[in-house]
Image (tube, rainbow, N blue to C red; front, side, top):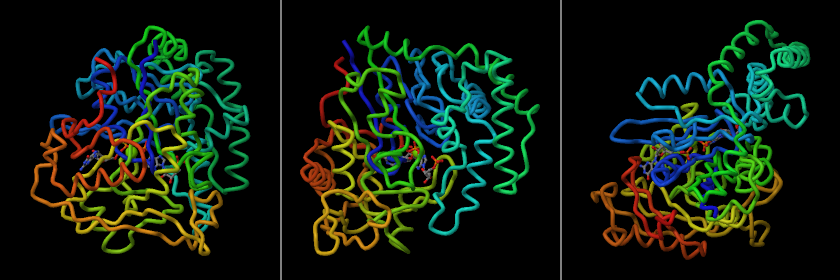
Length: 434
Ligand code: GDP
Ligand code: IMO
Ligand code: MG
């Protein structure tokens, strides 16, 4: 019998998914990344040591947990190799790592195109991508011009596909963007060498995960990004290029949809977004900067300052319904302590009408009026990170959690109160029956 939990970001990414996956991985046999690539940055803090995972699944700190990079992810083999080297240098074993032979490979021309396109976009058209080549790689996948991990182990096929890809990309880079062309030989040699080094990890991951499902093993599906960055359901075109919502699990891990059972939606106690695009509850100026400093809100992948704002229940309700979230994990509650009275967005109004859900069209986000409620300040001076018992939290902190839970009609099953692995309060039943 299957025994799975899916972890998805309910906002615009960086909700603290890494921390929660790490905490749950102690009970899991397998962690599977099903979409995204090196654009992700999942932070884990254990005994004062900070780890940031980009491509390697956030379970690698536990020996014996299989860490699967699924077919739905896009993998820059050079970046993965560098990440692996960094992890190994910390004395952490990579024995559990598995890379899908069907995952698409990110090449330097994808990064060059990502960068060139961003450069050409003017003002509000800029997406603010991570420049990791994610969009162009998924575009090649859909256009059937991509190169998959398995292709690298058939040298003639690889050379042929790489040559053809470079002919096309160089023409575009040169003629359309005025960017320098890329040479075949160095890319070919570097990726072949990386493929050779990574070969022990490469396998048919779908079969691996299906077998684990059949055996009833505890499996975590690790989402990257968040619902509002989902290519179909996010704030298009200010999104990433994969399905960051729960629906991405089946396709990207190679399992039937029924393998998705409990869904833990991770939401920060406020909202952040890195990159451009609609963000109705954003706090501008000093109030936003203060929240950024309190929460150390700087991107784990690019170091960019994150835009900060209030919790947005219209956006969250949409994300919860779309993902089938069965339990919310509210993170960074400690960050709000001492900020002052807290506002929460409870409604959107446009042209005198209530909006039930975020609009689909970019232009329709303009002119949204926010309906807000103000909640009491969460006090400073309490040891939030050391608190293990929900009932011990200050009244205002509990009121905030319960307000969110009631408004969203979904239980808050865990509350995270610090970056450390241990700073986590369990409210609901344990995720895996033990
Ligand atoms: P992810 O991409 O969803 O895994 O999130 P990131 O790692 O990009 O960003 C979350 C940041 O918040 C990281 O620096 C975490 O160490 C930190 N963090 C996670 N949970 C908490 C929490 O409950 N309180 C505080 N103060 N920091 C947290
Ligand atoms: P994790 O998994 C936050 C954002 C980028 C940009 C948009 C498109 O750590 O939550 P891309 O490089 O994917 O083409 O960029 O998506 N973005 C993220 N924002 N957290 C992430 O991942 C993100 N991955 C991409 O900033 O706005
Ligand atoms: Mg992140």
